[in-house]
Length: 345
Image (cartoon, rainbow, N blue to C red; front, side, top):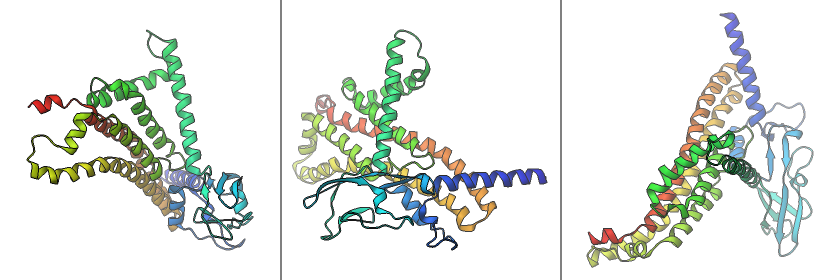
């Protein structure tokens, strides 16, 4: 029994050390060398889930990526420099070349005017990584499809083809109908962009791409634009002049229908944002318990729970991609369906 106990202790120590390396940030640093460190769980969690001009993969100089700052102002014009210029050797934020960094926003030192920030932030870098992975994977899938025409799929193609067929036959086609092929490229891209973003976000040190409300809002706005631009006469007539409804009720229904146009992208935005961000917060909160209590036992138990929740998060990553694509298909299908048959009844 003592051997098993020692083995568990060693395992928990190694796992806790790995989690520390993966999730720790400069928040652990003391103000002066030799002072005791104070762990700030809320700062660590917020640092991970929010965007930043610096990407901390792990604690220390070599675990920090200083991203490029690209700013424009009417007073100074366009400026390009590294975010490392905002930090001294003790990781304190300092002024650089007439610019101040406050709460992750950049201002002009004299006037206090906020500049137009075009910087490659942590989430932007993660978005570029996600897009690169998508291109590499699906160019390989397309090449395999071309080379294995009429044959059984092989390699990467054999893994992704069933997923593509599932999205086409179980999500897009039933909800949009016979003209689904027009919207299939967008919806497949949407599904895999969210799926890859969710999965990459679970890697240690990764950015919270699909848990960023700006990203989820952009995806929802794209669905909103495609839905309403594709909307046919029947779709708009059901909104502005609902058939089969008495005139007094139409006055009540009209504002409800108009509000409904905007609540659809809002629900898409919030659902993905909340689901992914909540998962990251739960994982980091459990990891933080080991550092708050400074106990091997707590670290081991929390590590086991984190491992279990991570498996659930893998499932959530697929479910959220499925749900976002499903509702996007449903909204597009509602806007493009032939209402003539229903009107006849």
